[in-house]
Length: 273
Image 1 (cartoon, helix red, strand yellow):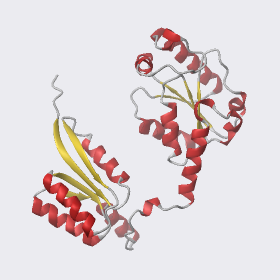
Image 2 (cartoon, rainbow, N blue to C red; image 1 turned 45 degrees about the horizontal axis):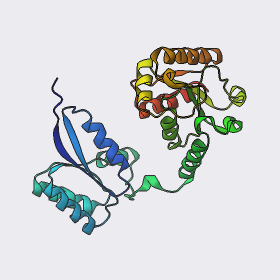
Image 3 (cartoon, rainbow, N blue to C red; image 1 turned 90 degrees about the vertical axis):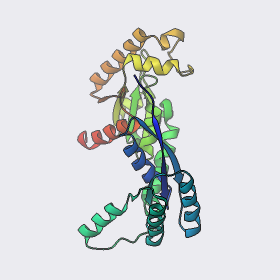
Image 4 (cartoon, rainbow, N blue to C red; image 1 turned 30 degrees about the horizontal axis):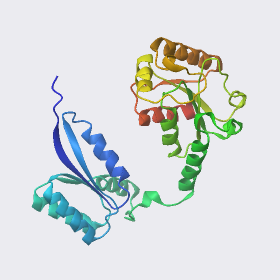
């Protein structure tokens, strides 16, 4: 099988943090598996001087240019310079803004970084992140009923990174390891507010991940059993039985990214309310 990949330069110019642009660029690049994008990210580009330095960099490493610049003058400069250099460029937001303007019958305010204002949603995300970090790996069980979501699962099923991703969306998330023979906290069984979701993976996947991680001090795990596939299969069986008794939904993360797992959890919330 030929694993050779071709490389190309991908220039991402933003007048804000660049998160939207990076996500869009990577989503598009992922559709071309034989090519690998060499990303050049230029955030907080808000004046002509900054932009000209960026365009000089593009001239030395030509490639695809994507941008989210709301200032018309700067956008025009990008388009003109890219045409002169001979590289393709696309405004990622412009077609969407045009669609909104047509439908809403009004012009946009064209304010850089408008999605990052420090409003109530912003502070809710900060609160959720603080809550999630404080309640990682079963900590502070007395507060479980204050969570929006509680993730449970055997060791190495992506509970912590998924919790943090959800917190960044403003969802207060706690996570608890499932260990055969170790009962879950009573406060979890008594909780009425949070959605409890169990994350699982195949025994092969869990073993593979565990083999590449240093064995910590998690209660109930001993030496070789930690990576033994038969032992892991028993852990998964125990976790499934636990969920069946409590009517908790299960998500298999074997072939899911953190983002896909989080999306599945978010989709469950209204359905189970």
